[in-house]
Amino acid sequence: IYQEFFEFPELRSHFFPGLHATGLAISVACAVVGSLRGTRAVLRLQPAAAMRPKPPRQGGAVLLERLGGLWRRLSSGWRMVLRSTMRSHARTATGIFAAAMGAAILVSGFMMSKAMVHLVDFQFRWVQRSDVDLVLREEHGVEALDEARRLPTVDHAEPVLNVGGTFRHGHREKKSGITGLLPGARLTVPRDRRARAIGIPAGGLAMSRALANELGVGLGGQVVFRPAKGLRREHHLPVLEIADDYMGVAAYTDLHFLSRLMGEEMALTGVQLAVDPRPGKAEALFAELRELPALQGVHSRHDLIANIEATLIEHMAVFIGFLVLFAGVVFFGSILNASLVNLAERRRELATLRVLGYGPWEIGSLMLRESLIVTLAGTLLGMPLGYLLTVLMAMAYESEMFRLPVVDGPEVYLSALALGVVFALLAHLFVQRSIHRTDWLEALQAKE
Image 1 (cartoon, helix red, strand yellow):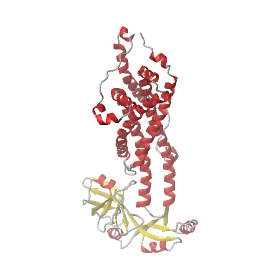
Image 2: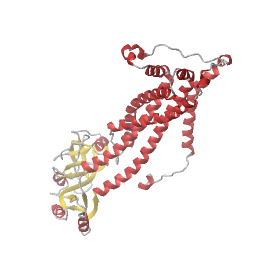
Image 3: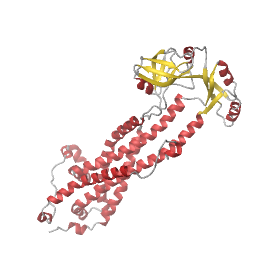
Image 4: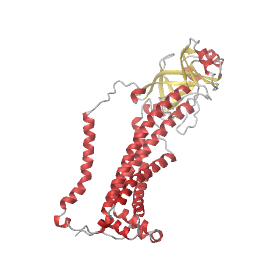
């Protein structure tokens, strides 16, 4: 999938023995560690003791029974369920841990999906709001802006001056550039992390947080900028605002101020256009643009958004699909295994309930309640773990070209909770089938 959209220097897709051996070793190690407890108990068991019926588990009041008012309001079924859940410490803890890991995977996947949507909205609908960007071959004066305003279907035009150069702060240097905008610009609006618009400073810089962190400069600090063209003198510029973005690094200032730094009265290297959005209007504009020799490039924001969203949708669909599959395996496998072990250990007890008049579905409902308690507890504990996992992934992905926002919402956690319950119900179908197939008479017979 990555090879369809990106070009890497080398991306070989074949069998890597070392990686597969490492994964296999981890799986085998986990399986061995998980089997040690049961194996140790079997090896310590004396043959004569093993031939006797298993003694009943130790009873006693559980913690909830000390809450008399609440305990008395519970039905007998719920009391049995809670006693069984709280007395089986190891099985309950293992089930909660597995559910927490599954929920963490789901929350992380859903948050990644929301992060991609937020990135596109923030970068291309809130910060960069122009419909068409014109890139000029060289610097032009205000006449280029006037000519752009006369183009067909253009409703609004704003000049842009991009000046590349080198930033320095202390011993740190970074090659980047400054974008000059008009005060009150509407087509490029720098914003902070809460999406609030930031004013274009007249005598300093509004610097992106990524660039500020790389230079080690904070709000109110000062950087040295040496332009790569024009009057190549070093300029000491204060950082008056910190802007947030998720693609590339940028620094913004007043266009007239930047022009004076370059030794010009008014210069621009590009024009941003807001055009008539009605169908059929764009053809006239692009036909006119093809005749302009001063243009180096034309970028359509709508085409860019459409391409990014199409790419992200395909990537995210595959990504979320695999995460849901992995989480489903964790949920389903742990719940089914724990429920079947619980059923095998309590066959005599459940057979007694069957004789007392409980039907297979009523017995199954008791097992289902235990599974749901464990699943819900684990899912709730796994939600903050999923958030933490997403934060760590965002830190790992962070680079100069791309940064992943951390975005959550109620629908993320509700979706994870709903899928956890669905997986628990699917696992219980197999448990319910085992209950219907149980020979209750044979289970009641004492083994002498």
